[in-house]
Structures are given as structure tokens and as C-alpha cells.
Image 1: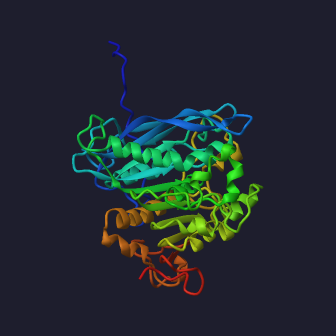
Image 2 (image 1 turned 180 degrees about the vertical axis):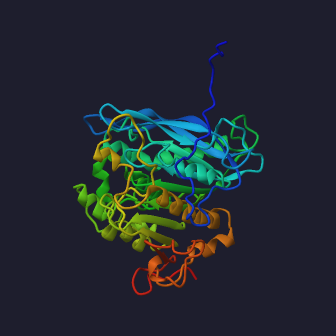
Image 3 (image 1 turned 60 degrees about the vertical axis):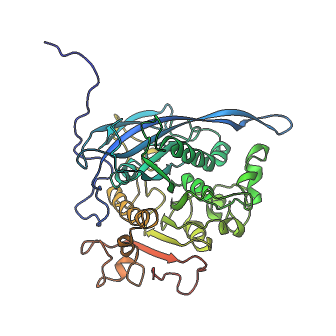
Length: 432
């Protein structure tokens, strides 16, 4: 007898992006919760359309549609559930591929909330699934995690760069407002009662890091305004931003927009800090974790991410450095597809010298400690951000880093600066 066709539950995957290696640091493995996942279709009405400037320079207005994937704690055993996320490689034409996960589609929210909110913003191009190695992990630890497909900036619909420059921070802030609304108690949303948006963090990779820093208060310099038609970026400049008080922390993974980055991209923006000047960086006042490769050739390191870390003087901030790494320190591994994958496409996902699974585990460990401290007030997370002096992990073989198995704290550096502290003598001191 032939069984009736219908929805099929994917088989439990043997491995998924983000699984903990045997040598993973203490906070990398999944937390105690099973994970549910739900897709939201959001509409931000009346947004400026930079693709249709009028002869007089004014911009038409249009509804901006966003797809947002939301992960959250659900009843069940940690690591249970089977999920297949559909994504594409941005070739011509795009090549579809599948990403396995450990989550359950549209499962009920575990009634222990509300949970702090983490908003995730991908690179250019990217997708809401590109960081599923992190989004599932954080949801298992008691967060609602909302990853945005930034329309016009995804693997499947990458468009004019001005669309990304304008909409990254506003997409983040709109998504925050919508998750606050949909997650409030007493509503009819599947997320009702699940979201504590008063405790929000923004995690951004590459162009997502650019958007995250601006959404949290780092205003753009006035030189950036001509890059987007109609003066549409003016409201995101230093002095014009009113930081959203719900945002309490930022994780900026290889954030784009520094002086080194715009120079490499031949974008005509002056100033030592590229898209930001000193006044703009001074607007960042929430704790920030910068994560970067030592040889980042997209966002830059010296004069790039490191310069942003050093000059965001009003924020308590840390800088995690992967020695020998380039730009691709966050995303899922290169997909398995029929036929060969080009080197260009492969290097959208892979690092030349670092194992991707190892990078996932390091990101999970430090981001878990950082968000636990700054969103949940978990003081027992602080020691994982306090490392022996000197800051290079393999320079202190007799003083292993907290949470790292013996012989594994190598190839990484961790720097810290308090709010009000400039770079210089003692800039590598640890938290006190």
C-alpha cells in the first residue's frame, strides 16, 4: 500500500552548523532548551526608495517588505528537532542549497519567558539563515533570536549598494519595534508573551555590523550623505540619532565601514574612520563586542575594525581577534551542492586557514558570555571575558583562559577598554 503524501518531518541530522567540537570552550555547546522557529513577514510602510530618485532629487516612498526568521525556546529536549533551511549561492543563476538545523517549525514557545531579544543582521549579500550556527545556539540558551532577510541585500536579490547603506539600521530598528509589539503579553501572535524587548542586543556581521553600530547610536559622518540619493542618510548622522533605550549590547563581527574598508572599496568618504567620525563613534554608549580576523581584507583590521574598537570611547568594549583569519569568521560553512563550487563562491563561506566549526564554537562561547553578562546580568559569565595577561592566548601557556580545555586557547587575542578609556599604554588590559 502506498502511503498518502503529506508534510514530512526531516530525519534527525547527524551534524549541523554550530555543533560543538570535542575541544569547544565551555559556553559553546547548546543550552538547556529545545528550539522552535517561526517565519514573520513584516511590512515597513512608506520607506524612501533610493532606486527611484526624481529629477529634483526627491525620493518616492514605498512599503518595505522584510522576511524575519525567529528562533526561540520550546518544550522538549535540548538539541531535538530537525529542520532544513533553504538558501542559495549568489551565482548566475543562483544555486539553491539546504542547511540542516536542530529546530522545530512553528513549535509553541516555552512558557518560561519573556526572553531577551537578539536581532541578527547578515552581510552583503547574505541571508537570515547564514548565521544559523549562532541563532539556534542562542535560542537554546533562553533568547528570542530574530534574523532579518534585508530585502535588496540577500544572496537571492542583491541590488544597488545604496539600498543596503540606507536600510540596514532602519530594518534593525523596525524589526525591534515589531518584535516588541508581537511579543508583548496578551496578543494573538504566536510569540505573544515571549519577548522582553527592553533587553535587546544586536548582532551584525560585515554590513550587518555597520547597521548594528549605527542602530545602537554610532552616527555617520556628513561625508557619507552623498552616497545615498535624496539625503536619505541625514537622519542617521551624528547628532541626529536618538539611541533606542531597548538596545543594551552590540556584537559587531567584522563590521564594515571603517576608513580601511571604504578606501579598499574606493568609496569617496574622507576621515580616519570612514563612515564614522569621532563625534559619530562617541554616540556608541552600550557595551560592544568587536570580533575580527587579524588579516581582514574586506573590513580591514589595523585602521579598520581595530580602529573602531579603539575610538568608540564612550562604550565599554572588547575586541576578540582571530590571528591569521580574514573576513569570513561568522557564517555557515560552504554548502554541499551538485557540481563544483567556484573559489569565489567558496570563499564567501570559508576561511583560508581556520576551521569553520572552530570559529563557530569560539563565537558561541564569547557571545554567550557577553550577552549573559549584559542582557541577563549573569555575573558568573564575567570570568570568561577576563583573560590572563598578555592578551594573546598562546603567549600564556601556564595561565589557560577560563573555560578552555588544556592546549586549546591558541590563535586568539582578547582586548578590553572601559568607557572613557582611550587606546594606548595598557590598552590590552583585561577587565577589572
